[in-house]
Image (tube, helix red, strand yellow):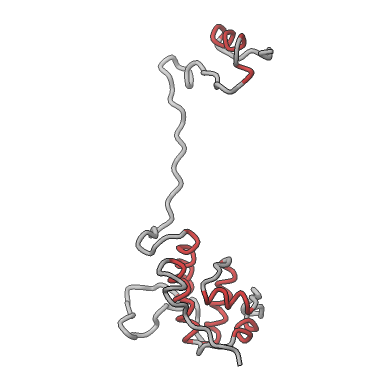
Length: 183
């Protein structure tokens, strides 16, 4: 008879983003009555859950020895929710239970797990995680010179052989680059 999986201890999986992700997966694993891994694997790759996941990958996800792509983690969640007869896009805590109920928190099981997965991938602690993804900085145009030109007289890069020696002299005299090589 196969051994039942247990949540790894803190000595094996220390507190942090990976442990939080594994703990959330274990919530669903326990609610599904700790099904055997082949049974979970059989539910993945079906019509309602198109991504096939091996039982070894499931074991590694539940023990925290790997972090897989979102499609794999989501397929595991779908299979565990199917065993619980639960909607993964339903509220995370649908009924008041053990002080976990927050009627102002509409987070779904899938949204919460995805947030934990992203935190694990990024290596963020829960209190460091941004509420929204940071916006990309806007590009800064080059400063316009008082003479009306962009950037003034170009200064040749020190490591550019085309601007070294006599060619750099012609650059300073004509205000442009010479087509002549420096050798």
